[in-house]
Image (cartoon, rainbow, N blue to C red):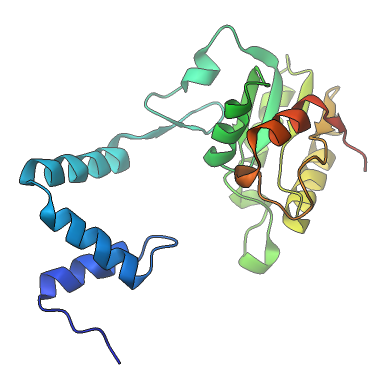
Length: 203
């Protein structure tokens, strides 16, 4: 039985919200009805924030993290250790590692993991730009902080092969993160210890 909406505008709004990940029709309807109860200025502020996010957000030209400027605050911070790069899958992992307060280097956001079944190959990720950063010199260690999954392991191995020609230490975070776990769901203490107790990457 299909849902019956009293308004086409309401249905359109519910359809739009339900396109978001993890949002079903019932949750979408709750969100839309909540917005209807808000003041015009609150809804306008909400919509403006979304439009500005889409139109004005930048991706750091160095590490590909989300930023308000061409170069993100982390890459621009002279207090960070520029000789160490922590490679992560996406922006959520940057936030997760930063929350541990155990890492003071820079990041490199791949934008995903190698997943042939999903049509995602190395060329779809920011791997070449990582190789170029290492090739430019000044990098002493690259930490692979990727998910302990088959896709994460395949991506780590590919990066390992690409960075072999360069005199750089390659390490992986300690397996305090359970195999199969996503980094963003790890608690801060476990993730922090994994960063501190990282181990050399082995072929």
